Amino acid sequence: MRKFSIILAALLFFAVAEHRATADPLNTSRVLGVFDFEERQLGNDEDLPMHWLKVEGADLPHYVNGQLSSDRHRSGDYSFRMDLNGGSCIYRYESGQIRVLPNAHYRVEGYCQTTVLPHARARLTAYFTDQDDHPILSSIRHSEPFSSQAGDTDWHQLSVELSADDPKAAYLVLEMGLVQPNIYSKTSLGKRALFVDDIRGSAWFDDISISQVPQVTMSTDRPGNIFRSGEPLKLSVLINDHSTSD
Image 1 (cartoon, rainbow, N blue to C red):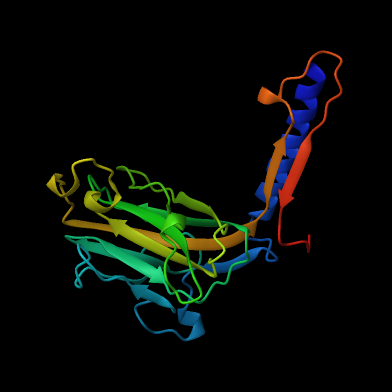
Image 2 (image 1 turned 180 degrees about the vertical axis):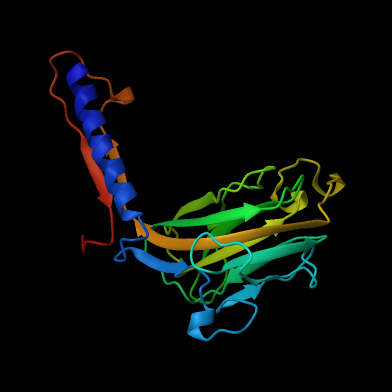
């Protein structure tokens, strides 16, 4: 049993090391997109970064907006800032820009700072759409909702992971938002739930990356992965990876 534990620990170490290495944004063979918002040097003089659209709908007032900003940035000279004026604010990287592979696994990472927000939170969201840009609702994943504390000057990492296991998945869509509790909170009261909103506040997003990363699954043919002393040990290792350049 001790021998099996040592072997399993070693395999897990190398699997995790491989996962971290391939999720590194510096490994360009696996990175599908990087958003550092340094678009002034590309000739973009608009308030919004290219291909990002404001999401409209209930609780998303038209007067609550975001813009490229130089007042805070994790790298370079710019980030993307959202400013509350009641309600919530969400921006979407339009569908049709990031094509996905069947059964591939994806990781979205980004960094965020906010003003002190008692109620509203910043978060990243990712999901897949079909060929006609219809969202696949079962694929929607949200990062943890986040707000900075008083005196906190660090950039907080937000992340989302999702797998294109629906045969209709064709594109990956990314959203960044500054949302009120009625959007991110879970409640069993439905429309009768009462939430307190933040009227003012801001969030900054920077260095968002989308990577295709491998999945590693290890298993045995024994319930609970338990072997008797002296029995031969057999592990099944399955690697689901559509990128083989490294």
